[in-house]
Structure formats: C-alpha cells, structure tokens
Image 1 (cartoon, one colour):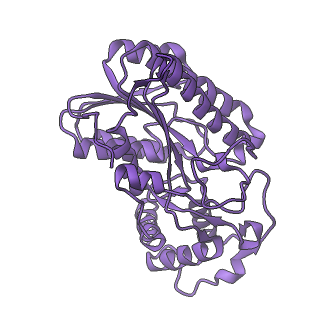
Image 2 (image 1 turned 90 degrees about the vertical axis):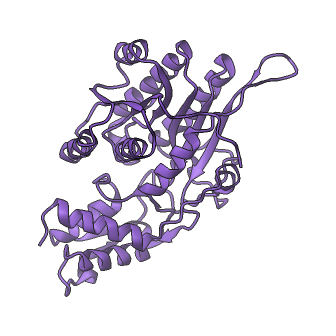
Length: 353
C-alpha cells in the first residue's frame, strides 16, 4: 500500500463540477472528514438534466456552514479559472466538471469540446502556473470502447473510442500525461464505472427507468437485455477519490535528468458486472419496497427489449487490482443495497406516498 504524502488538513481544495453527482458527495465527505479544509466549488449548472437536483445538492453543502465558496461559472472560461487560482492558495484540484453522457455527444458535440477539452486545458494551465500538489481528474470506463478483453485493465490499449465523449476522456488522459511530463505536475486520472445512487443523474438508466415506470411508460432495455455493467455506488467512488487525493504520484528524474511523468491512472468500479435484466429486476423490487411502484405492478407489460444503441458497449468490467494494491480499497456496496438507498431517496424527494 502506498503511503499518503498529501495532508488535506488546512488546505484549499478546488472541486470542479461541485453541483454534480460525484462532486457534491465528495465535498460533503471532505467537510465531514477533514479539519480546517477550505473548498472552492465551480459549476456551470447546465440544463442537461433537471437543475433543481443540482441546487438541492448545493443547498445540502451550504447547510454544513463550513469554509465553502461556490462559483457559478464554466471551467471553459479561462479568466474565471485563472482568477480562482490567483486569489486562492489552491493545493489540490479534483476536476469532475465535464459534459457527461454517451448518446448526448452524438447530437451535441460542441458541449463536450467546450467543457471536456477547453475546460480541462484551462485547469491544466492553472495547475502549471500555480503550486498545486495534486491534480485528480475524472476519466471514464467509456475509454475502453469495444475492447473484447475483460476485465478492463489500465494497461490495456484504449485507442478506439466509440463515442466523442470517450474520445474527450482519453484526450484528458493524454493531456494530463503531457503536462505531467513537461511541467512535473502530479496527476491521477480515475476511470469511473457506471456511478449510481441517491440524487444521481436523471439521464442514467436507473433514474430514467424509475421515472418512466412511475409514469406507466414502457422502458427500453438495450441489446435485448444482454448488456453488463459494473455498477458502482457513489459512496464507493467518493471513498476511492478521497484516498487517491492523499497520494500524489512521486516526482523522480530519469537517467536523462528530465522528469519521469508523475502520472497515474486507476479504475474505480465494482469489479462485478451485472446483467441489465437482473439490474432492472432488482430496481423494480426496491421501487415497490419503497412505495414508488404499487405492489401489483405488471413489470413485463412495461418493458421492451431493443437492439444496441450507437456509442454503447455490451459490457463494462473494471480490473481494480492496482486500486487494491496501492490504496487497500475495493468498492463493495451490493447492487441491491445501493438501489434500495436510491429508491428510498426517490420516494422522499418526489413525495411519493
């Protein structure tokens, strides 16, 4: 196991995408665990999905009454990003701001270029010109594309993205590597695998399915239900991020006297892919248990098996060996436990009797 070399106490941390699903949970966790921490959050709060959920997440953070600054802006705005770093002694950056979603990237590519490429470049430039101990940034399991070898290892080649979203995330890894090499910036990329949980993203399948089932609509299950996903509960993702924040890749020079890039990539996934049909069955059972759906709900009448969608992949499956070896951590929340918490939150948030 690696020894921690970054002390979070008394530090200023910048979390981009702070109103997002992972970002807001990370901020709450840091405030809960770390003394005298100052957190600056930035988020553009786009209407890609219901902004009310984003504002609700921010309200929860503000209710903690901690050293918290929120900036409503996009990381694609270079002047705003530079001002944050100039006016604050930012020690650690966790870049979670990104336009997410595979299918949306097919019809709205500009959003991905602005946030995921230009925005990330602005963050890298700011880290270059200011004394930042550690840059942690979100990548995605989407970079593995249609790789046939499973489980997916960070040692695998990922040169064949099947969506623009995946291409931008692979680009982030390449850009971070270049900046680590050229400017000796310690950076760690995290490939997240299908994150879910309470107050999650409504564009994700489990949330969308819930909305549709509640409205009596028919849900479409892609690839005739034969997709497998490594569903990862949000608290497990946050646990991994917090541990990784505390170890910046070591800086060393090579035989040529030049820096060896202090650069790492990790998978954070459940290491246990679930069949989509099994997942939907558990979701249905937990929605009935939480009172979101009636006990006599006819699920078979509300599902349709359809072909694969463009940009989708049949399986995601994380090899988490390096995460376990370096940080003694492996996500462990079961799908039923995670979906039970989501269903309970959904019933409360939407006032389901």
